[in-house]
Length: 81
Image (cartoon, rainbow, N blue to C red; front, side):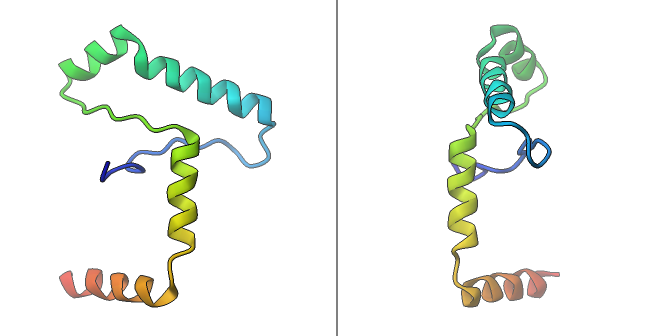
């Protein structure tokens, strides 16, 4: 899944846990809805939804990346511009 966080949806800080879970549940249900999927296909939009736990795991791995690796990545991006 190379684009796991390409279009993340976020909620405001300090959102109560029950509301966050309700939003996550509703979003997951929407991505399984047949009409939603049909509309996405019609518009040629690729769907590969990820849940909040998957996104948080990616963010944790990214945050734990050694500073040297981040510097090399940024230098590579700058060299391409």
